[in-house]
Image (cartoon, rainbow, N blue to C red):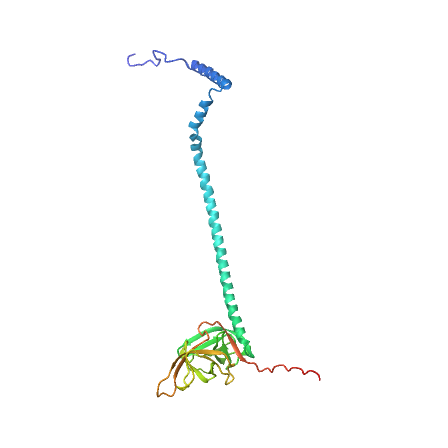
Length: 290
């Protein structure tokens, strides 16, 4: 029939499949025999291993990349957790260290106070500050010691550097003290160099006191140390009060204008020493038998 093609080819192309299989089998046996006895294919095998080396590497690359990523992510999570833990420990240790530094500073202040307390015979007690009132017309402290602790009005207040003021009102649990810079406060002092007695008075300024009652010809100079004279019995004698900073003598004026700076750290002290003379008589020495 016209238009119908014969599915069978006119000429056969090459040997049959069975022939090809037989030839390949014979060639394989020959090649294996020759290779086994004479090792002629070692060079070919080595060359093929070099050429085909990237193939297994490329096949294994995704698995190795996934394993590397997984390990790095896990290591990063561990490092982040350890870093966070170490930071927390560092903060806690830093806080503890700051507390130790604070305690060390407080210990130094208390030692200085106690060394100051050994100069005279009196009763002394350390007190802390609850509040500070530095109004220009009222320099006042509130202490955490009161009547139940034996605090009495008029009791002197000192720090490791000098006189700070005195107690003027006592409550059962707290007490109020006036600083020596309060305008209403006056303190009997003497010049340490020559024992010249006078009175130092507050001005309402933390760094300035005045000596209003010294005549122009008084023997006082800039740099002189003023100490408590002990008159009146309120303050033990010999405690530093202030250092003279200015002496102005005006002709025709009766009194000189003299100012001084307190030696006590009025705006920095956190602990103070409440002192009063010790009225306890000293122990009597027993007389040796005749």
